[in-house]
Length: 224
Image (cartoon, rainbow, N blue to C red):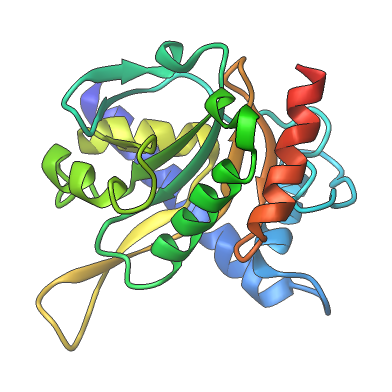
């Protein structure tokens, strides 16, 4: 049974990798790779991609992202999606050894949360590693403390991280560097706005401004 689960997880990661490569090759003028990836994924599942919303990518009707997970937070506590029930989350998948995009996007998330002022307590910034081999509880605790005092870092076993990534359709793959003994991790780079029901309400492309994210969150908070 465990071998079958591992095989399925591997096939999902390979499929997402192929979709990401296809998105890079098929992106139209003015369309980012992230938008092309979302459009291609929607088409594969028979959905029609809706027009982008201000500050984010509109999910196709019927496409559901998010769901159950079991991970360990940066304090060593076992957590599931139920621990965040009733609150909005800003979720990003990355890794602590990431040289550029991860710290940039986590800084954006922190700034977006702070821009909410009196509503900030209703939103939890969450960083989920795709490199559990190196991103231990202690490493995550040190890392998230650099960005926001309320940011939650989540890690786990390889199987637990893979399950969470599947729920959000996150692509990631280890890449060995030819000029060093350590490795990097290629990964998709969306910021997810998750509603109180645990389902993704909006996707934000890389380089979306904190103000645009905060504006989208305010709209969701008004409707909650």
